[in-house]
Amino acid sequence: MNSVCGFYCTFQRRIPVDEIVRALVLLASLGIQDVPLVQAVDKAPEFKYPRPVVSVAYVVSGEPLIYVVRSSEAFKKAAKGDARQLAATIAHEIMHIQRGAHEGPAYAEELRVLKAFKVGGNALHRVKQAAELFRYDWPNKD
Ligand SMILES: [Zn+2]
Image 1 (tube, protein in one colour):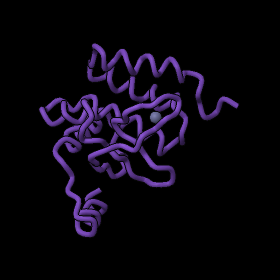
Image 2: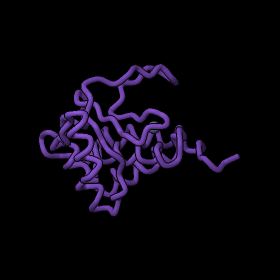
Image 3: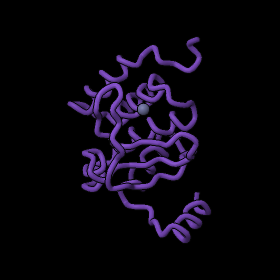
């Protein structure tokens, strides 16, 4: 990871930010250490399917890179020291990089991480709902 960061920092002038580092430390505590480069961006592209959503994070197909959105609630919480939601979101995106566009495994993983860090309330509720919605969207289903 250091060599990737060194390359990236040197040639793209990007610096790993504290919020992301906090989230990656949390993921490492769960044994999730094989994490692609995570980059903070100011704004997410607009996704219109299945309904307009404001993304916390996203990946672009074919790129081994996770983008996290600075204006998201999860990022702002991480800035204040609680990176649990950001960590869960990154775990979600890792599943997309490893297993493709299927939301089933991605939300299942996000939910698993939120529960491991004992996140409750609205954050947990929203992900539970999404996980239920995409429950049957699994890569090996067909
Ligand atoms: Zn997803």
